[in-house]
Image 1: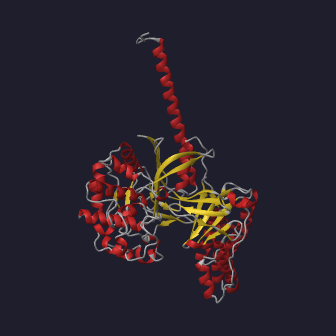
Image 2: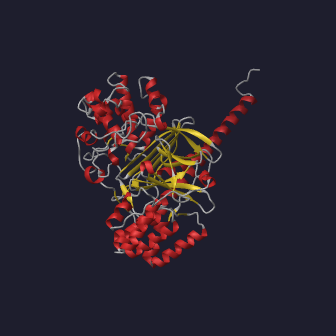
Image 3: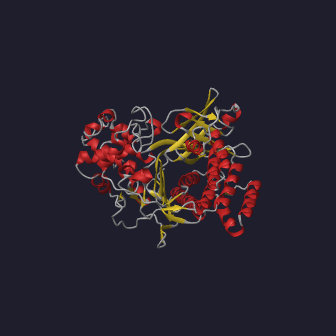
Length: 585
């Protein structure tokens, strides 16, 4: 039967279509309201200060700015604010490399020495462009050098001169055998680009990528240039904010020197989705093909768990952290979602914000922001003294409050706040409280020992340094301090203990340190194993039921276990730093 213009059937179809569109609009509005409410919680608790854009294919689901781009002048963040993006730069550097491959000027299997003849041949003859792109070169990463901050970070370098800082070093492993995140590799890619084209890296990037694609709000963040709508970078303290440490932008270079906006990154996302970036389809295939530890060329390609029912979605993403800034760029490619979160304060919780947004998009509950116990206790100490603060901490812990962050980093930060202020007595009380709360963490004893040493309590300092080494035999700082105090270590100090298989099985799962770095814990053949993104499995040796050390990399892990036995996350101690990773699966 032919349906005429005024037929009841056609009218019904139109009505149903309009109703469906209205419901979809209401759903989108509801999601936007939920996202705004969720992010506002983090902003109100000083755990987020930046701008967010959430997209669905070519439509913006939500965008907003939070806090200030410039705190001196009170200028707000917006989706058009320009943020330094750190390692998100790497995908743009990889794009230039692939375009040069398309033009026949580079080969992915070409060696470093094919393009940089002065590079040491002993290593340069063994490392390919592919190795540099995939963090599998074995070259030591310059940002991990112990003296990077004191000797290099503030000083300008030409690309060729800075290469000599690391080019003569021994490789950490045979190229192509291991993944180890590496800024030196992407720095070298920038130098290779310059030698092949005869132009500065930033100019090649502009000519080959940014201008042709209309990415007008993305570029190389030179310190000396005036860049409109550029955010200032800050570090969060317990009492407010301070300017981030100065970094000469010749150092991040092709590994991390770009700026962009949420809107420009969303435009970049759409161009990639539409296949408009490369001349040849196989270039995009190369970029998004996962290699060691799911790393492609400037991107991480992995599955993202959603909720608690085992559901996963494919995620193509990369994060970026640089002095004063953190960026998270997530692309849920199968469902067309894009989540861009940019922050101009160190110490913010960008990954938690991203995960919460994704949960909302898929109808799952988002983890709400928690109050900082350190900030709460600081106010009490200043108003009523340390005894009142200790009492309040005990009350909150006893009540099992889920509104506060009781992580060991909280009291540690507060203790060092007072240590820096010269109030050694208050610092000692707080760090003793942290030892009581986390008796299996070597770092709590190490921190307390430092406070006691400043108080001239050498016996107490030595006892706590000994305990820290007992829990963590690879705590070189503790060993060094004990040697300075004239204390000899006992044979067998820090020997392993036996932990039941039932307890070890609880620790199995995935723990996310940052968007591009996950630690997978498995229990195999009676042994607990850890595997960081791109690296091999290593045995975790227990020194207590919750604390483990890794001899081969001089690292330690403490599992965060709630009173009911739930494993919430872990803290990784390595190279003098402590990093918390929430359990995501």
